[in-house]
Length: 365
Image 1 (cartoon, rainbow, N blue to C red):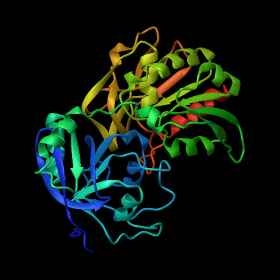
Image 2: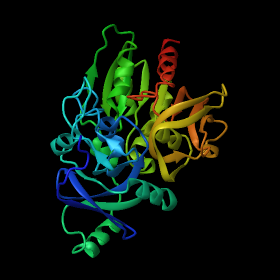
Image 3: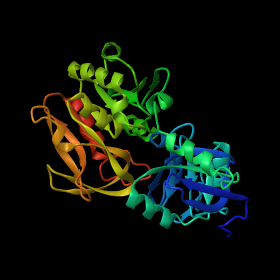
């Protein structure tokens, strides 16, 4: 099994001027994005198709990517939203009973520019020490264009991310046996959120991010789900104002990731950008109500400032065991619970999938 393919050269140029030389895989060209890292050992196809990575160049810290191939079932959305992809090694001879192709062809199909055969350990340490930074992956001569590229890198920022990934119209998905109806706000939702609701008997009505309270009320749902999504939560001012009115409907609300952040902002809370974020499938979260610690899947660069939530509105229900950042809020002024992590994790860990059961119970009650 040959893991390093002798393709043409590719380069990673960071905002601090550091250049990593490697080999090209996937599509060829030049892409700009925010360079981040994820620590997942598996789930690379889910990472590549998670809309929350919009505008970002993703680094896999696990050194071998692609060993079980790709398939038509594991994508979290219909396309890829990453700006670029960085791995130490990619496997050109994948082996798995579900395998339908290799990751190199997958990247080409989705027009993702990738680079392999670089020191991802060194890159990850750099991001941990200095924080996430912008960068460029290019198959052109980076040295001849370094000054020009650095100017573009330093001017880049991820903007209008939710607008870029949300649905443009309403979609309805029917379960085998309908028990209730959920309106799922598409801020860049992952397919498995929908699947977790469907298998619990929820009819799922996916709506665009800017759907208003009046439009939600007309759908007569039993519950409302605010999904994950990309970008700076505070820039979504229209959505935040809509949420203020939506929560007055009294319908049970469950928020995940960006949905958690937007709900907090709509209730007087604040958000902050983390130094390098939480991305991976091994983030420990403490449930303050039970005292239990769960292993969770996460993908976020912003967090809710826990003590910014007014006591009259709600309380922090979960914290990250590593850095003590807010991971969940139990609202008391309105009928809502939100979490920063991903209880729908696919493929895993499944420790917190019970939160979907709790959401269904809240609708039944």
